[in-house]
Amino acid sequence: MSESERPSATEPRFRVRARHTADTVTVYQAYRPEIGGPAARHGRFPAAWKRDRMTWIKPSFLWMMYRCGWGLKEGQETVLAVEITREGFEWALRNSCLSHYVPELHESRAAWQREVRRSPARVQWDPERDLRLTPLPYRSLQLGLSGEAAARYADEWIVGIEDVTPLAREVHGLVRARELDAATALLPEERPYPVADDVLVHLRH
Image 1 (cartoon, one colour):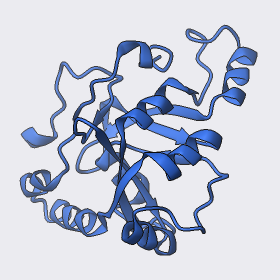
Image 2: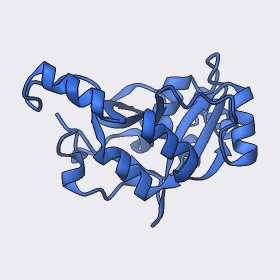
Image 3: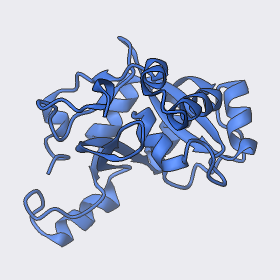
């Protein structure tokens, strides 16, 4: 393992890491070209995008690569970097519930199910990935948006959409060639995201 892949011993298990500015945060999604292409060209999702379904956004580029197989999985061939407002991102976190029942956090399974029904967003923490897409000992955020959250995402939060499929393919090629330092140099810079502790307290387990 190269130094660039080695996780920090002090990295907390649950932390939001993302490419972000003072006003925006970048998340990743992957779609078939009929959705991803027009979205990148026009900066908004086309009419064919199903806003009545839950859509999952991921601040981790490498977790997205794990999920879409470097943009090679069927139906996920176009990888998008979607820049959204921090205000919208944090609204989603505040209005989220965990995607699964955790006895230490929830009064009962029924209470968690009630929370799921009334929450427009869901959070799932999955092992972060390294360049070889193997799991790391700390977690990466996935944020599922439905109902009001999905509508706000599509209509209000998006600042810009970029097709980063060429980047995914280039990094993948370098990984396959075992040029890990060169691959690391191309990765988006994902830093700890400064979110208030009270925003995440109901989402960590």
